[in-house]
Length: 242
Image 1 (cartoon, rainbow, N blue to C red):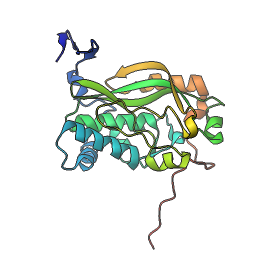
Image 2 (image 1 turned 90 degrees about the vertical axis):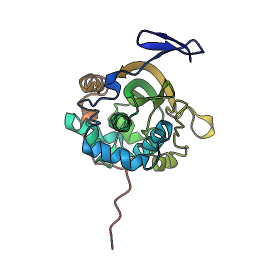
Image 3 (image 1 turned 180 degrees about the horizontal axis):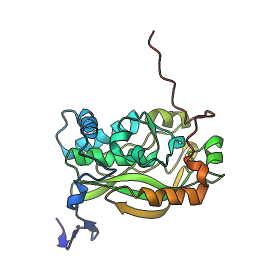
């Protein structure tokens, strides 16, 4: 089982594992896991699954694929970053999707927190590169960390399966045991994602820090929500009932 230290344990590999605290199961302002909307979303996702790992996998799949990844939805409105609002959305980007995964996990009894990192992303289009001022580095890429089987496991539910098919890559899968981060390689072995800098973990969303970093890196246009133009990131038009 490993030996314990204050607020942590050392596993058999000699790795210090921080233990979950009360706040990792409690609702936050953004990770509002006590919201009826979040609870309904989580329970619909997990269904009859009773094991923590099975519930975590089901939640990951639901957040990944029920909300289309759209990097052009970045907003300055704090209300749009609450998990209860994200659960109602049909399109969103990595940070809000990570918030929803963390909140959904807490809602079904799985300790969870948020993590962030700067990444170099080749999962891009000319339209997105223009929005980012010609850069290919994403600051504050968001993911969730879930505490399963006595350790924290990273999971990023950002890119939905249908979007990945457009780019010719397999979707990220989560087995509850291994970290599920972004694609390191694309078709033919080309590099798709590089993790450059760790921004740490948080009990709730540090929205002010994130928006400051986004505006400093890309300019104020990064949070100017726009529907102009279309590319691989554009969600399919809703089907009209005949």
